Image (cartoon, rainbow, N blue to C red; front, side, top):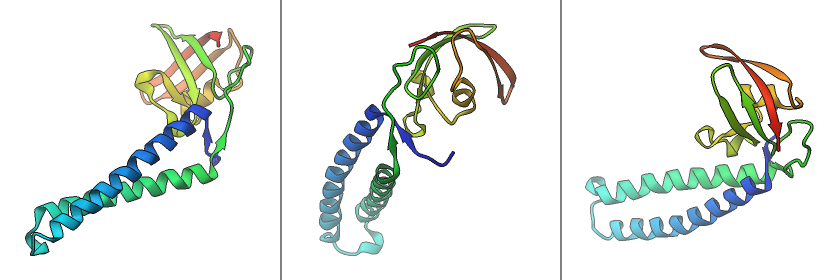
Length: 151
């Protein structure tokens, strides 16, 4: 799946990050200007650090702008019957119960329960219904989940 999917919240988060990065970029340009005024650039640690920071900022700005141009914004589903992008689900494995939100790949944050729709777990849940049992291959083997609730 090559399509870049984002929820409206994920798109807004990228917009906010882009604004912050563009502000930070102008501050780094000032740092570079100030460092140049210190003289010999070959031994100027401030200059080299600022140029490196500028490189990281520019790369992230380009990445975000490229993603925003091609992304498809998908409104979170209101379906309580099928798991789709934006669904919040409650699942149970043999060991414990988990709550996940299915999000676009750039919004994933597994520690916050946000799993990408293109991750093995996300793909396994997509299109499923309440009470479906899903088996997911993970590095440590296979885990079976039962879908308890779809919000």
